[in-house]
Image (cartoon, rainbow, N blue to C red):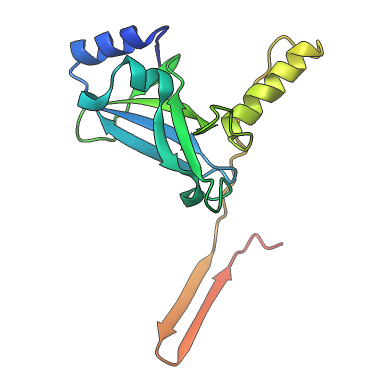
Length: 162
């Protein structure tokens, strides 16, 4: 994990380490991971401070209708070199904001977690809190399906059973 305290540090690190692109990751309310990738040539201090615009109506659980303009602002405090890209990519998680008003988007899971943590501190319930996802998976004994012109079905079976 890389830690930065300023946009200048991010830019200096990117230049020194031949970073080719910046990837901003965020999740929707259902846990789906989304991202916006930007070539390093478009990244400057202004970008790192103000973020990049995106259409919130394309993200499940975010926005609908005409007022769907949003922006994603990177949390530059923590970053990592993403090993899954073909070119050297510096990844950040971002916070979603309303594009016009610069207000935090209240359905952004990271903002929800931040507000919950601040509430715990303000009420003196805890000095520190730890948050983690609930990992779930399913094991199926067999899965069968058919999709033809006059027939379509699926069958999922598990020895675990419910």
